[in-house]
Length: 470
Ligand code: SAM
Ligand code: SF4
View 1 (spheres, rainbow, N blue to C red):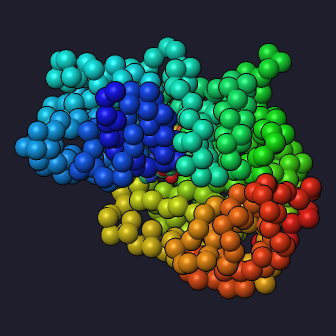
View 2 (cartoon, rainbow, N blue to C red):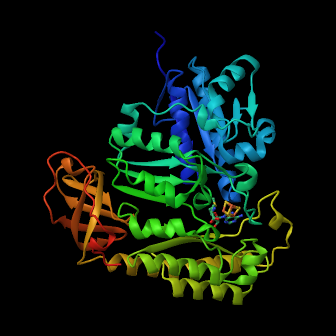
View 3 (tube, rainbow, N blue to C red):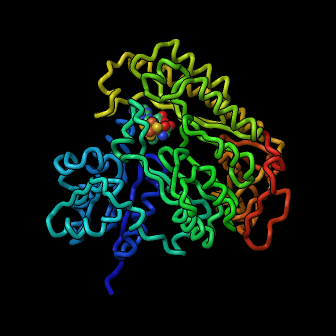
């Protein structure tokens, strides 16, 4: 028997890359690869890259510089180290990577991971291998499922891709070019994946997609199912205590999704709904195809059915043409909505996108200053949201032993880390916790109910039975 080969994957960027990295590990497990946490003793290193902003893609080339030193050292020791670049930089800059970085053996785009074994063999034979096509057949048909022991080792929370690609073409964004057109997976495949995960201890599923609420997959009845109907189906799977989904677009908030939040206790009341800007002028230039008012109305519809719902968002500051007045409109929207948290970014022109041809009007200094003002406001809202938890009793899904001995950490419905003193048998259970204090972003509390002797999820029957400080 051949000894196992060691595989190290470094992922950058979004949740979908985290998920893709796991699927690459599952694919290569069939080729005798086992994962290692260290790059220097690996036989294969994969950089799973992100192209969303310039900073993210630059990291790839500096990392490749470091890997070249490791590869040379491995060769001196008589070992062969192969290097692959995967993800959105691979898709966008395929042959340029090959030209700029001779250290790279394989370049593989996000739709071709199932071909990794063949590509490695081709690189062995021909020196290099590149594949950045958008294949006609869906890669999910070919990706092997994870083994039971792998699922258990990955913990109680798992991502499942339900939708990929994007047809929205926001003028600043590379996703439609790197991930391709919007595609939804069929319902039965997703149900099978979630069942398998639940059978091996997973308690929380986050459905992911670049535009997850544009989901329109084929249902078992032959009809097209929207996300809300899919969530309803998944909520019936035994063992699944919590459902989440990310990332949503304000234009695709339909009634099935709102009704799912009204009816499903297992669907967490925390929605990531990016708006990008609070100015209609900027939203139009970004081709977001919604106004600030449309966004407010979408938020109100969620709030009308679930009072304890909280929101997070993404913002871009310094988009070409953004004036101080436009930026103040963003601050006003943040103040009006009140977020539990949000991500904010400086605009970064991406080659090949329509906005890259626009004249940049906001100086680097102004951008820094706007980002700081926005982040200050978001941080103050996040702190207030977290502080409001103190004194309330919230449900926590426990995930793992914390760093401090005797402590177990889990997450609230709003993804806040919560720590209690307890034994490890509570891992995988949803238990009520009285929150006593807040340390930076972490809540500290005590269990108010005894854990069950065997891990099993508990969920309250209706959303209104939860008490939160939200
Ligand atoms: N599909 C999601 C949506 O429409 O909201 C977002 C997907 S994108 C991977 C994540 C975030 O990156 C975006 O919401 C946006 O705030 C940010 N982003 C994308 N392109 C950017 C750019 N060129 N410059 C700065 N931030 C960008
Ligand atoms: Fe990018 Fe816009 Fe599509 Fe989101 S909706 S992935 S920001 S193009």
